[in-house]
Length: 265
Length: 153
Image (cartoon, rainbow over all chains, first blue to last red; front, side):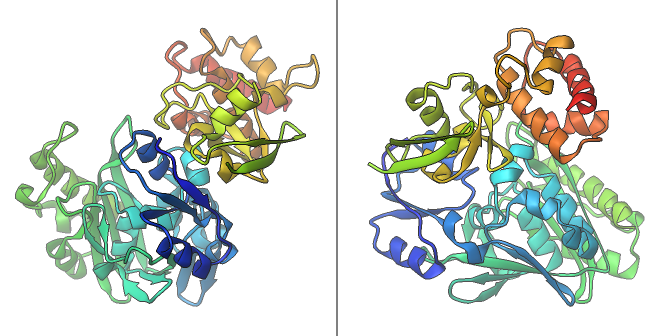
């Protein structure tokens, strides 16, 4: 790991100004992706600004039809929250399936979506439920937030404060995970929400997480696994790597979508 | 250099570290607590699992400065003098190890599981061990040891 200066601010405003004052600063949340990246010398920030000391970023609140999760809330806290399980069981289940228990004890929702790894789980929940992401500067919809591989709409000095998920009438997330890394080879989040049916796919897209409008229309007309059985995503838009070909990923998307609809009931 | 202060196995410790020092390096190299192992160094194998404020964590994927002020327990902190912790005794009794390299992390992870989910089923135990890799035992005796410790802890 290259050397860096470490800062642990206690407010969002202080964190933003610490980043502005740094040559090439980087925020660290749970560190479950960034620290391995630093260890491999794949990044060399001049300053690391730890968001772990900012109390206002932590916590879960359920109010009316919305579940709001603070950006620094650990995956284990979301997975173990009776409030989340009661309001959006699919969200609690998704959080409980990220990585392994030790990763879930450290990793955070804000870190996950800011990193926007194309195989991460949380982006599928955000896009699948139509979440709103609150930052230090504004509110942005999940549809506008995820812009490409490891790319988001966040500015360099913008911090995620919380993510608000609307409750869904039905929702489920099913993934086919890589047996070694536990990242999703393909993960599909389906939801029947007040705003319509949403289907979000992670792990597969060349530009990261994406929606499948054809499946959404089919499910809006007929909420059943059969409705999506004949719909395949064009492999030309999907990733091909040592873990799976684009054709196999396309096949898995349809299978995971069917399973997710069945699981949602 | 930053100074870190934390409680390790019930004792208050502090030291000067570079910001890039990992928690596991601080434990092993500054405090000479070499029971915590570094296996893969890529956050996958779990040989380095310790408890940080009551939750199991991979100490190779955490900076020492991030643990400033924390309560850390390592494998050295489990036994009560010469008396093994029930989880350690169960691993011994059920031969839950062969080479022993993964054992400190396995035991720390297992203790966290039994504290949080005392009645974990065999399936839940196996799922919990997702982040701990053992290349010797095939896991069967590790699972048996944890099931035994569910009765004795």
